[in-house]
Length: 319
Ligand SMILES: [Zn+2]
Image 1: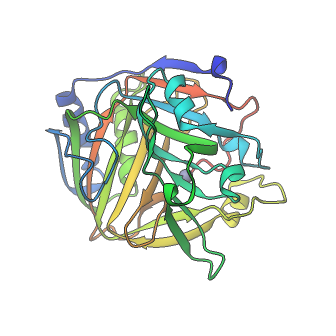
Image 2 (image 1 turned 135 degrees about the horizontal axis):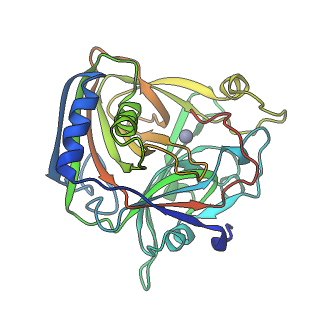
């Protein structure tokens, strides 16, 4: 488990929602043919297609970067295991709802796999509700095997690394993004992030939330069940080791993005997706720019917490 005394925190800049909408509206137009960004009441996230354990993304929004890629490559550190209930305390929000992108604990799961965390953490007198998904390589056939985490395991553990958004899970105002037909090179997440980086060059802003790829296909990866026995020293080594797939809409994606790293060695964007047709994993971008349709709900975070930051770091494998 992480030593919580090592947790660092940094206050993020949160613009007026209306101003941020105007900025994102303008910025996304560089990469999408049709864009509509506005402030809305968060839809009820307990409903389809989300099926989250809470209604909304509001109430003390914050993000955290736990562990990191340096615990996975060049060689795995299998003892790096964390727990969502502990993380909720580390981010000073016990009982928080947590979503994002991470890796399973190989100790718990018995193999390596992608994790799509969706956890209402435990609070006094209330047990945790784990609605997470995990995606692994099916040993029979080498395709994607997407499973509900709680169907297999009773805990809220994870391993190695995660980028997480935490909040009270309340209803309230959020930023809705509709983007259709991609005309630029950036993914939706990259476009949101770079827009904020350009508009607020001397500040750090972060968004967490969920978006649906309603039409089209997406490029994803899934980590193999076995860690690499030989060191993965370059991005090419990592990409060679990862299993890449093209998957189909509808995909429900959970994302955490930071416009600018305030010096905490953050992964500045990380997105994992699940579906109800057996596909899910680590999202890069869509592969169908002419037909793609995105609908997302995002919340600016007020704080970033850095938990169990690796002592020795590198930039390999952060795509
Ligand atoms: Zn990932």
